[in-house]
Image (cartoon, rainbow, N blue to C red; front, side):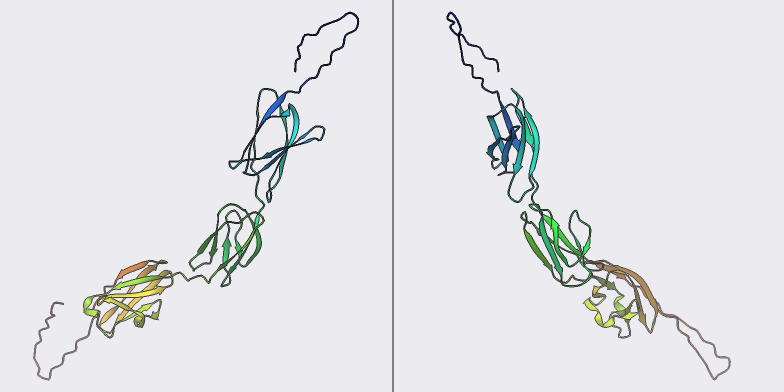
Amino acid sequence: VDYFTRVPLDEDWNSHTVRLVAVRGDLVVRSNPGVKVMAVGKDGTEFDLGLTDAKGMLTSRKDLAVGFYDIRLSKRNHTEWSDKIRLIPGEAFKLTENLDPNPGKLSVTVGMSGVSIIIPGQKRRKAPLQDVEVPAEVPLEVTALLEGYRSKTKSIRLEPNGSKTIAFDALVKESGSLWLIIPEDLADEKGLKVFLDGTDMTARKKRFYPALWRFEELSVGQRLIKLTHPDYEDWEGIATIEDGRKSEVRAVPTLAKGLLTVSCMQPGTSFELRIADQ
């Protein structure tokens, strides 16, 4: 800094003591709340500038002389950070750096085998999991998944260096329902049978009303439906069963063709066949 003053001069030699004051600089730090800020000078002198406030801010005005410093940020259970900066006169140095929390450890169990566990940002793994490192201080959606079963998801949040165990019950198999609509004149026929993929399902029907038969908890996928009755042609159709949904199919069987044999002992007798409307 420039120094100006007036001094009286006597004859002969004169002396005057000059003391220079170092120019001070400003430092503004933006980080996590509660972060300790240290500055280390070129000669190794340490300056404790305090902690960032609840908003993660710390402002140091005129605490440090201009020049080079090693700035160190630290917080319990977080990774430390340091870098060199230079304070210059008339301009505040603005530093923005968030510290990452130390990861937590997660264990996962499932009440059945073969289940995959999905954790955001990580590869899929088979359960059980033991002490897997996961990010802390952020919400995590952990999902248990198995082909043909309904997935389950649980939300967790770990503290830095914390640990947690998630226990999933056995997954529920995916299933849907079939609503089979049949002609009303066939609804009470004892000879009517329903097959799904070749399996007789007649005994499992639930009659919602006479012409509507319901079949619950069917495995998902395409299912071949077959209706049989002694007086009707076999009827077949396809139903696509989806998890948690109903598939509605209307069956329209047709009467089977019959054989009529007529014989008469009287020669020359003629016959007339009339077919009544159905």
